[in-house]
Image 1 (cartoon, rainbow, N blue to C red):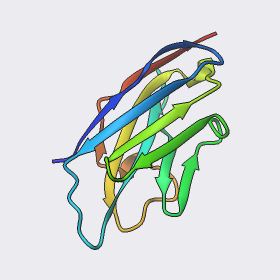
Image 2: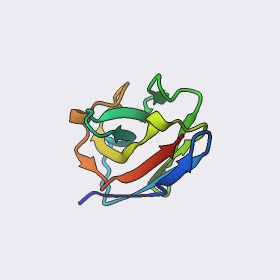
Image 3: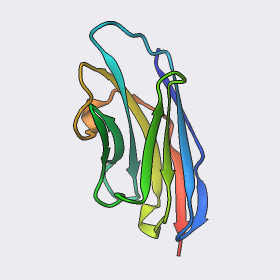
Length: 127
């Protein structure tokens, strides 16, 4: 059974940095699949949105975080990190790690495409 555990959330002032980490376990591989991982966030009263993802051939970033967030994955350790710099109050949300098995990683993260989710970690950015 796939399990995802996030860590690294917290409170920071605008302009600061945080690093989120997600450790995955329970992946089972075969010759036809790969596990693709992504970060989503959900602010109060808003829909969950894809922030960053590992996609086939590279990475995806939402326009709102381009140039400020960096996603990285360690396949050997089954971990994916999200380095968040130059944080803004509008980045305040619960951040979720997501994963699923695909033949090819989706070109952009879609909530309905990922079946495994972490418990979420709160990120609060104050002005």
